Image: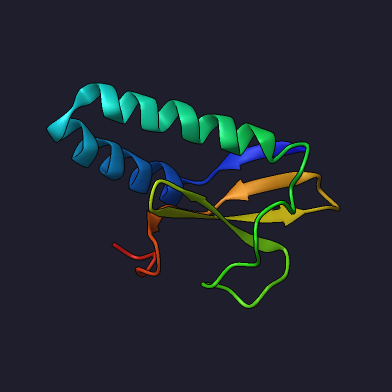
Length: 95
């Protein structure tokens, strides 16, 4: 499976990391590294997280990390996993 990071995800991630870095830059770096590891693990286990609370689709799942929700879509036909966005748990995906 190939991981695709959408523009919405990258923009939202930049905002989250910027917010964390205001307090402690090393915490933002650690957050990103741990999140990248979880995302990489999706290649082997794409359905390891629960069905998304934001979408009515069994192929869209919610990865959770340190109070954030990262929805992603599994496309078995294309063998891709698209990271859709990142938000605080139960907040809207739109900023």
